[in-house]
Length: 106
Image (cartoon, rainbow, N blue to C red; front, side, top):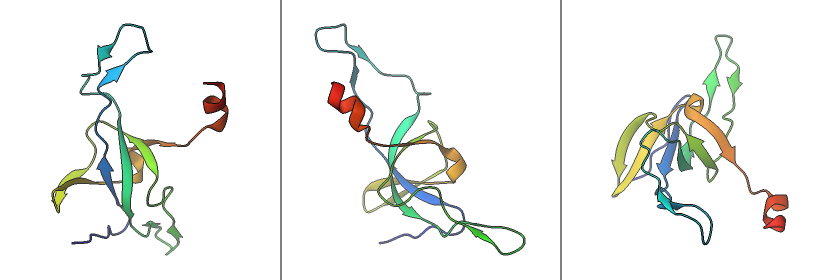
């Protein structure tokens, strides 16, 4: 089954949380904070918000983008054994991009 969000909604799939934090050889702690932001992948996007004058504002993200969301956003929905969430763009804190400068220094 395929779902296409309407209006200003997005459909995301949360990624599993990172089980460990820390550097190699350092103390490793388990991240169990339920209020920590969550990573997710955008699965589908609606057409965008429409103003009272009929102007459609496009979505700030596209399908496949990796995003950071609030810990408890939107409405859950199960499709084909996948836990998906309907959210609004306002629930996205950031779009995660690959920074080549950081990877080169690592």
